[in-house]
Amino acid sequence: MLSFSVEGLPPREELLLKSLVRLLDHRTHQHWAWKAGQADLRVVGGQASAEADDPAPAVPVLAIGQPDPQRGGHFLSLPLHADELENTLNRLGAMVVHARGLGIAAPDSHIADDEEFRLLRWPPAALLETPARVRLATLMTGRPTSLLLLRQRSGLAPQDCLDFLADLRRAELLESARQPAPAAVAVPPVALSTPSAPDSVLPIDSRPQALARDPVQPGLLARIRSRLGLLTTGHK
Image (cartoon, rainbow, N blue to C red; front, top):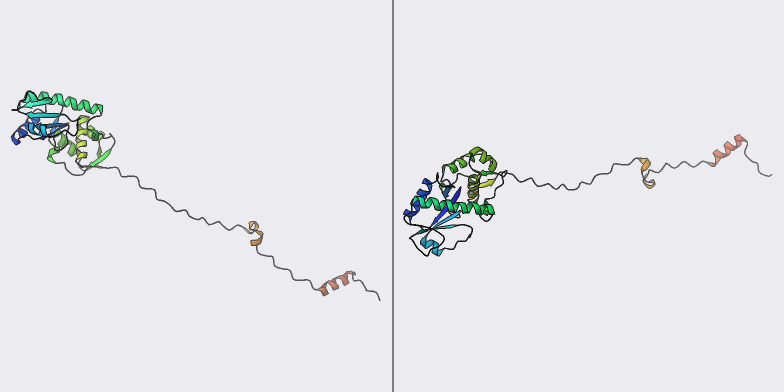
């Protein structure tokens, strides 16, 4: 799915252009859908193309207006004809697809196959110009999905799914479905209490002092020696 924006065309010509693009959808090589803002192709009226500079050189510009022999680039004259518009869209579509393959266009459209996301709300009508996009939005309603699942369920081309998701992301309608991993909770170090050591390993100074023995009375020793015949007599 490719997108185009319209600038500077009279309302009648803009309505005719959008109607022709929808009618040619089954004939063009790519599917085209109008969108507001930045798109894969800028369609501008003659006055707008002369006054506005393209801020993104990778985005091709299709000018529509009165015939001008000196005009270069991609140009369609008024009134629009379906066959000329079809051929021009096919040429410009091939340019956009080639630029994407070289990585010089749609830099924000990269979405990984397994990246999970959810649709925040139903997209505006500007993003649902084709039945295929309505189907994609319906498949995304109510539950998270991924690019891989969306391709499998819709049966659409991978690029169509990717373009739709890129447009939803630019419109801030997508939200990542993966919750960030909870931050690790810092656990303060706990001072571990050292179990009391047995008395046998306590320092000597910390051991309980042994009870002091009662001093032996001198009279008791004399009686023991007397009984054992060890008592000595002094000189008379």
